[in-house]
Length: 577
Image (cartoon, helix red, strand yellow):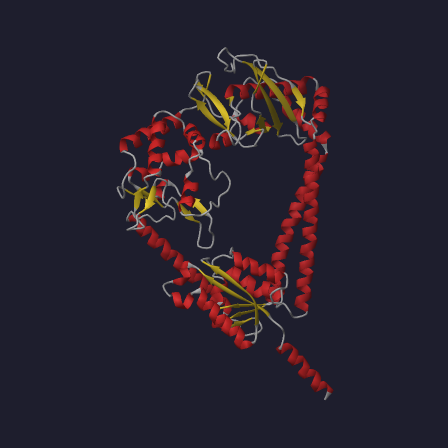
């Protein structure tokens, strides 16, 4: 009797296990497919609430992702549900069917086969008869594959229909181009916006009057004119979700308007595409893939004005920087940085005095409120780098001891930070390796106890072993870097020999610059006693973190301009601290 009583008690406890159930509902536009009643959020929720009531499950929370695709799991309420599961607030999940959980075969399987069981969560897909507490779920993987195939098929159909519509010249975008609004009679047709249409005309007029895109953007920013992004969200009564520079005009915005054929009445679409139905990353397509249909709507500007603007842009793009009257390549490309905001310095011809100059890209894009111009001529940078490199090379060749003193001074706080960084990476990798070994041990224990099947065990261990090899490789490389970074004497010897080769150079080229220099930081110029003063820091590609700092003073002409490239520059080298 005692044994029988005990058995009944165990069965009873299993039967009345208290579940904290979650109802999860999902619907995307593709899932609807014209059958709103059977697929609606309301329909899903009502059915699952009735199912929970009928089976005596207490519904703790309801999670809804309305308008989210099932091909990935980047959904706000799904993420919230997962966090609640991790915090043990939920131990049962109810969905209408497996496709509501997801339409990605691999990711859906990871949740049903691994995450839910590991977190002691019972998952039930009601219409599919799927229940993780039962053993007859063998059909589930095939249903997940079919769900993914359905999503893929829908994606193909949507793309195909959009492609056909684009070929017919119908507007298929979500946001009309600046200067236009959707027609109230036909949402696929564009009409000129009387407010922003005038702004577009003004942009073309100013540009054709030889004003730069940066100058036009500055005018609009000074007038506090809402940029296209800000204007659109304001027009629909919503807050602009893109906070950074959300209210400013940039030169790139002006140029994108000047290049858009929509303003001469042509519809240009299919400029971008997502990589796949599973990955939402958008990629830019080359012009040969664009769908261009002529004369689909009213033009804002005339073809004459358009052609004039394109000719000016083409002429500007063909302007090549010159040195001593001859064309030359931009040998400092991607090396120059603004010392204030750390943006790149961009290279261009200065139409005011035909000099080739660098400017802070953040200033160029967003104006003086974002950063200062940091304007400096190509000749000045060339002379600074040439003199600095040659001076160090001569010093390394003729007085190695003196160079070593300077090199040791240049073993800066940055190098110590590098050593600390490598040490922290090593510590993280050691911990990660320990965690992987612990997971392998845990899988082995679960396999021995029968919780994990041999097939799942082998797959998991194989994946952990692959990850372990990667971590061990990273750890080995990090320790080598740590050892190398700490050995200044060996590094210095190699650097001295490298520099000696350049003691007799007569000119710089791209290969020399990129092989020796990591970056060049340029300050905004300050006028001191009638001279323009720059502070320039050159960081060499040496493992000892060898850096030099050069201050140059350039006398100004009577009109206040700097006589760059003609005056004698005053160089002063100091160790970077």
